[in-house]
Length: 288
Image (tube, rainbow, N blue to C red; front, side, top):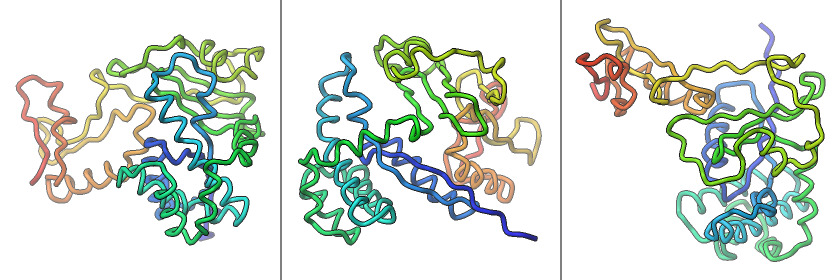
């Protein structure tokens, strides 16, 4: 049996973004069990949001402090190559997201030391020398998979030879806590966030040639269905992942394995019980 060629995944992150951090940890797990290699690239939430006028002042302040870590990662990559990006991201991310450390010179210097990089790179945090390189991550050639979930927008870039254009979706689940915004459609999003596409032709995905239509299962209360099937002894189910459930695949697999082997799991999954849709039916499926 021939060994499968690894698939390259380009992962874009801002060191301060908690959602990118969570997804990056999942990506590292995927690499352990699938033929995947990940290339890590820095991007900037400060650049992405710099022209938005309706941002809360607390968010603006957070974006001002976001420039430093992005510049330092960019400087490190330019000086020592792409292989240092992940170790430095790990060191910064653990401090920002787990230790809740401030985004200051002391934290950045400690992260550089952990990654085996010189403390002198911390000076890049206050320099504009690397800003052009940071902004270059927003060119058409570097457009990543993107999501603006505060307003329900997500999308995929042009994939040469596979897709004829940028695919943008508008998803608004019933329990979504959206922020006040002038964006209420794909067209609004393009006008505000992707001005380079304002004059592009818009085609419904169902009519576009070469574009896959997304299908995903939606649940009435917009939550997963995971646990024992009421009235069917020894039967367990896991469905209702919407378009984002892949991030939970390692955990869901573990839960279903525990249920199949032990008829119980160490996790509290009562929130996801299938029985919640059958009044009077037994719910459960937590610890055995």
